[in-house]
Image (tube, rainbow, N blue to C red):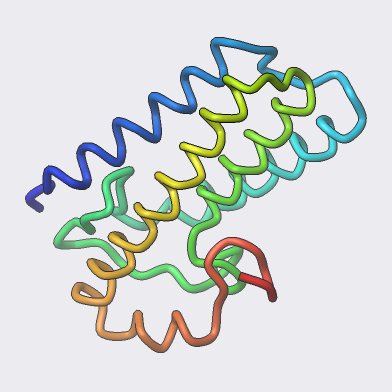
Length: 146
């Protein structure tokens, strides 16, 4: 598996944005909306981690040679649950402390994740013959919506 420069830049940007957001505000929100979003983000992250236990996928968009396509569990509803979890967590911590600076970082994170999904889906279509059919029956980030 050769990692492209684009993939490396996207992963570095993604983790930089997450790190900045975590460093500049509370890690766990104390308000009701934040707690609900945080809990939902953690449930999705745990469900995704459980589903990933048998796959050989990584944080990079390029799938490993021996990776398997997961289409059960949470992946039966959305194709990128980790990204959903990250974005929900971002919304949760923004409810605890929002500034123009943190909002700009959050928007940058959203744009990076959307670009990474486009790149990743192209690579997954090339790697997994069944991925096109899987894309037709699932949504990207939000079940039944998008």
